[in-house]
Amino acid sequence: MRLTICGFEVDHQINSRLKHAYLRVGDDGLVQLRSSNLPLSDIEQFISSKQSWILKEIQKIEAKPTITIAKNILLFANMLNLDQVRDTSSLESRKDYDRYYAHTAQNYVKARVELFAKQMNLSYSQIKFRKMKRRWGSCSSHAVLSFNTLIVQLDKELIDYIVVHELSHLVHFNHSKEFHLFVRSHLTQEASLRAKLKEISCILY
Image 1 (cartoon, rainbow, N blue to C red):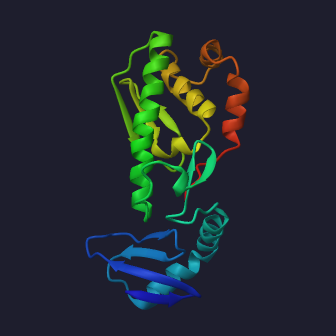
Image 2 (spheres, one colour):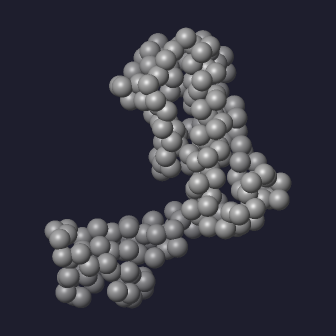
Image 3 (cartoon, rainbow, N blue to C red):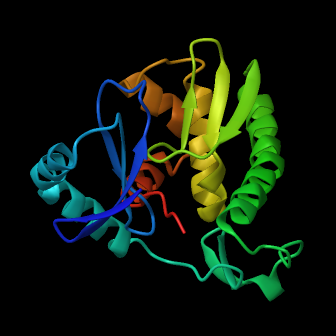
């Protein structure tokens, strides 16, 4: 059900099993509300109480760098026209882009993990890939390495840093001084790469 409340277009999805109301703002700026069948007055009051948060979320969306779907792709820190990249002629939707990034990450990053794991004399149990909002990678206590499929938007030097960083957690499961020294023993430019990565947020198209 579509509503206009406090100047916002709201898509209200009713689920009688929900005990609480859940609010999010989609990439298109549409406010999405999931709740039980609430009275309109309660919905208006709830949206009104969240106006400041909604505006901030919309501003975040508007501030994101954009790529014209089906024309450009950000790959290894280069904004390229699809005509310049192999196997991208069929990219027409965000799902198509997600699949392409996932496929590229699985091929490229897996090879880099295998290379560095051999150089560092380390072994892991599994590599996983998924799209993440706040992390480039992680390492579990069970030696499972996980990487953000959007990692291939970064330049290759930073990808190597993330790979070595996560592999190093197999030795030091923390971010202690010893951990950073261990990373630096395999990537001498560790400090500058770490600083560079902190300045970069995950770019969503």
